[in-house]
Image 1 (cartoon, rainbow, N blue to C red):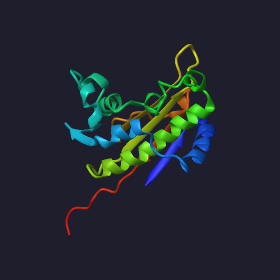
Image 2 (cartoon, rainbow, N blue to C red):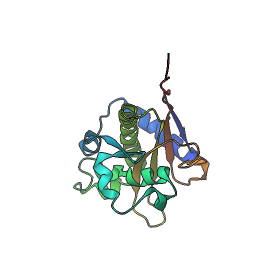
Image 3 (spheres, rainbow, N blue to C red):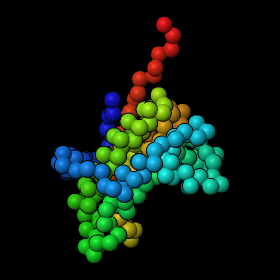
Image 4 (tube, rainbow, N blue to C red):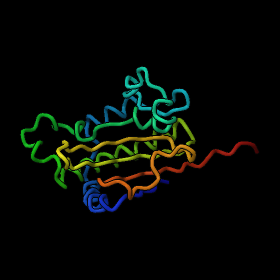
Length: 181
């Protein structure tokens, strides 16, 4: 079972994304990240495609395994959308509500697939985080996807209302396989 929670800033985008989900498919650049698979290393779950980001870092550098997973498993949705960097219209489109809904849609599609793939490797619940930044305050617009293993003692974030920009959390709560009779 997957549940969604979000802050107030995300609610209008989630409604827009719902309409897109009915006709959308995962963009090839995003699908390629997933096609390489997931792996467990030292008790942490990672995109295989992002293992190169580990380098000299360890979970201690990020306050624990959840922060480490969140750092390694971060994908820039806005960069991975097909044609994003090549389109002359992209700079004017980025930062709009339609752009944000498109990025969110890709994140939701990917989130469902990551949660399903993770269930093949672990019984641990997974949290997916999708964040949209419209680019106010002189920053470029961006949209990111992250996933982490849910650890009650090491939460990624607990209060979504504390985020100014739109944030959506997809949470899986897989049933733990029973052992014994």
